[in-house]
Length: 406
Image (cartoon, rainbow, N blue to C red; front, top):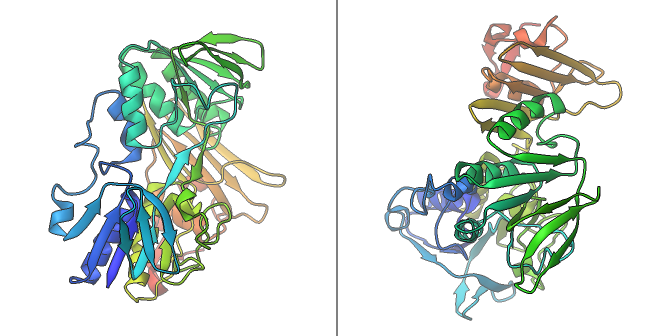
């Protein structure tokens, strides 16, 4: 059997490791544009010089050698599904019996002014992005970051650590608008401002013109305010990396479409991770890679953990955990609790089921909350749901499920 995996991120590496456990003798080849295995969650630490290419690696030191995996460090031009061939950028051909596409996603650069042609505008999704940012940051002092999600704030944190002048513009009225509500987000805003960051909230980049040197030196917002800059980092979302499947017949919607077994509509081709558009978090990508590998090895396992909304945030010593959906809708019930060190927010549906919870400060008992949300369990039995503990369970029932006392 000849396995080919495109991509060396969380999904691809997990799949390769699982395939080797299940099949000691078959050939496994990994192909990637990336020259180093790296955790994209840690790229800001590369920018701040806390880590380098070697310490960003999340695999064991001799992972490829120990698992007898051939790694080709080159991009893919296209996939010929009729011949079961992967054509590389140098026109070499990798034949496969089973193929996994785990190419992840790429930064989306919006068509704002000259953003897409300027030489000092970057996304931050891959190590090669961080390397380019790091190089330009040697001379650039004024950095504009477009977007205040996790990627934007990661970049801001790394550059503030280097003493840079950092400005962040965000369309929403508060930072981290996807992960947090305004109350919790403001705690991080205060800490970033104390570290030197400046924020422009409730506005967006509107005008940005390249000068003769090919760089943008100022950006004007839709409020009319103008901010000077030496470099721009855009953290305005990502798009699945699917250009290599053009003309292949592989079905695409938001990302590559897969069934419950991580299989595409084309025989013997699977996909996992961000390229599927299913979930943008690390543990889910790893789980998808593992399930894909098991099915490539002729097992029959469904990917059932589609609980995607889980984020842990830690900036300047303040930890937050967001599970599920904390944005209330009509008829939802919101329960909040706050003291000098902690903030808690729970959102319940009209029938008393927990749909989302935010813990800031003390994030203990996270496993209970994830189980309750995932299984749509009513929590009306508690006067204060934040008092729920393991004492409210009898133990485990069928297939390891908790049994409620209520």
